[in-house]
Image (cartoon, rainbow, N blue to C red):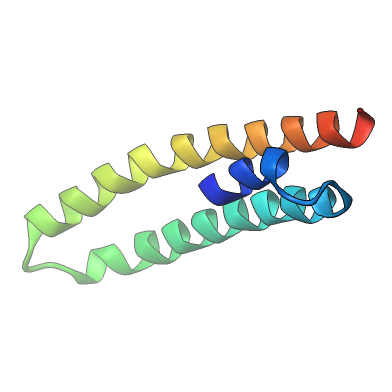
Length: 82
């Protein structure tokens, strides 16, 4: 997603919509991965520290990804309209 943000401004302007799509797909991938982690974490009964660490990482990752996704979308639309 960070690369997508960079490509909005530095990539080929004719393919900027593809960059916007990449940002949307990246967000879906992150949410999907987090859902898979959440469903499987209860099976990790022997390592509470690992479970806590994964929850902490997800709690930080999702807002960061959402912020990037919104920025990619905004900048993509601006580039298309300019």
